[in-house]
Length: 275
Image (cartoon, rainbow, N blue to C red; front, top):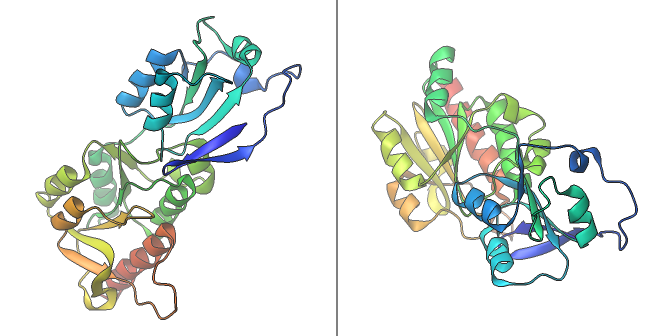
């Protein structure tokens, strides 16, 4: 079976054939520098903050090391498939897969300087979207797409407890990852402090905040969007200058994270255009 990890759950996304007589796809046949074999290799890659796209685990293995890897991948958007040992043997390039093979993303992350270089090139005050533990790869991809269309100069995501640039994210972004810098940082709170020294102000999305139309969202600004379930964390919220909300008139009092990001991003665009 194959699963994708969202939050603390494994969600089945497809069924794996019971027999492994069919030929493997080209990505499984060809040697790749982005392929990791063995438990230590996968664990060290996760520790280093590399984005794991796909993980193949030998069916029936449930020891502590494998359970630990699955726990670390929760909320990362990684696709996990439990397969027969024969399939891992066929995929293995080293012959020592230890019951696990992982595929890392081929996309490289940008640096903070790249965001400021882009803003300078356009002659605009920096506009950055900061994501606090977004776990759904579809949300991340949609937000990167929105960032590109609304003219944001970059997106910042955390290294841990959040999805990275997986294949699902790339597809959901509709190609925007090729044009919009995405920076991965160790600590969002510390990064906000660093960016404040560069003149940015920060607006945090929260349903209990000031209505967005009443907030001054012009100038160099960072828009902070929180986790799909818990919102922006307390420590990150405390670093922000504004707490902003979206007017809601219905019976449901929350929006999908990518939808909220789009609405607030375009309020920033509206205010910039009105100047």
